[in-house]
Image 1 (spheres, helix red, strand yellow):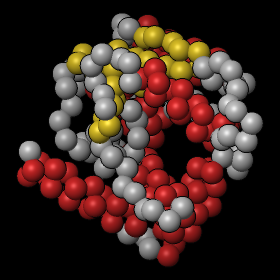
Image 2: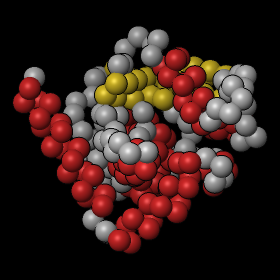
Image 3: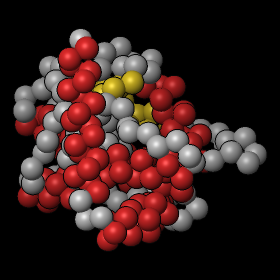
Image 4: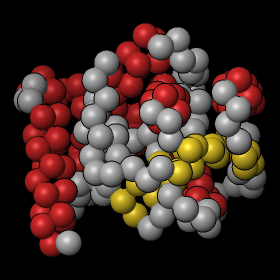
Length: 206
């Protein structure tokens, strides 16, 4: 249940919370650490979306945390990726928020992004910060996020679409990453080291 942080986190932040175990663990961790938090949640209009919204709003009400719900409406252009379109719409809203937005991205997300971009010929390390958004939990493995929720009795919901292979990230998450870890069990450790080196280089330049 070890939550690792990369870089500083401001005292006041907005947490982008989907209701999944990663973002719920981040929200609960920051709340328990006495950060001044509020929440932004996106409703994508899927079958499970209202259940996720209700879970997030209930948690926020129980802990007196301000929450704003944004509804993603419309459809992507013909031939465009629904997943990428949703992400684009979310960040259009997030980038207009005043102050720092924290996401629940973790070390497994870093590995998946590395694989995804490698398959496209340009391997990239997920950035810790972009515009007004930070990902300070990218040193933490996904299983630690899940353990936090279970051990702290933090509610969460699993979106059924996470198991649908029409999304590239799910193919990587459920098929390619497990195979990569069979080939190199230390793959996540390699990713963590790369993140730490880049952060140290960034701090040195500053």
